[in-house]
Length: 459
Picture 1: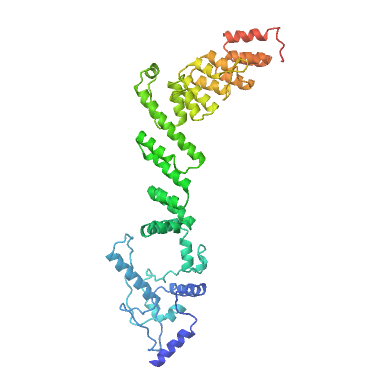
Picture 2: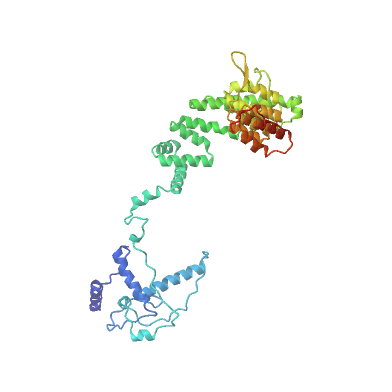
């Protein structure tokens, strides 16, 4: 027996087929591939003509040789089947082939690896539909292009530390287990983790902790803006106004401080206007009932409301357009555009004229528009201005091509005719006349002009 053991040891040490190890290098993988091909070429069990009775392998309880590939496959399938019967994991059931008949003799690994098939083994092959395969072998690490070939614990930690889900999970754990002082101190030295933690607090709505963190980090302006944003959740207008008043002392940047100051003053003014207009019964409110409250509206909406309902009030009142313009530093162009839209909506054309009139230092009055008269004409037409009002402002458009285009678009025939007359363009008049209804007043005017001998035409 000792002799047989020694010969067996010599066999394993001298065989070119080394035993399977978990060292997943390319060399071992190549060898295992050869073994797999050898086993897959056998359709049934392979017997080894063992001349030495002492060259016997251990046998498992199922009768298969321990360590053989066949035994490993069947044991794996058996364990999967058992676990599948006892625990429902939701996997589809696998139709298993009938079990192979047990063989009384053992099977050496050498015959399997070398692919030898004896006559007795061939005669004992089961049905051809029965196929036995070697288990799938793992790919070599060189084929995994996305991973390094020599990972260690430090490398693994480095890689997962850039995963946002991992970072968030760690931060949640640290938030529960560490004091704020220690947590804030550690986060201050880790910019990536800090950004994730701030985002986490915003998502979970933990404003108080976020304010403390920003204050600890010395980010005072961010802390102030975060506290200021809390006004959005306050529904009552007077409580919101009081909250905004407390925000005035926060360390904002100069621009943000001005914004918060304007917000507070605007809401304070809106509360006063809203209270007064609810009680009023003047003609304008009867003819044009309010569709919504002025509270919490933007500054331009508030100005439009003032120009619509309170136009002409003295500058000393909170609801006066002039007062709002001065208090909130509204530009001339923005004020003109807002007031023009409000007065045109009410079809107050005399107010439109006064809005456009300017007087120079000599006392002469002329019309001026900071937004251009083309835009004025478009706004007036949109609000249903009479033809004469449109033509008065259309004649003030400097660019002749734009003026003619607007006149043709809005059917201001006199503007088109007078422009072509000034340009002494007889051909354009003839073309335009062909588009008019024969016998119409405009058609007759053009007919008289093109036959006039008092005009020196260019064409």
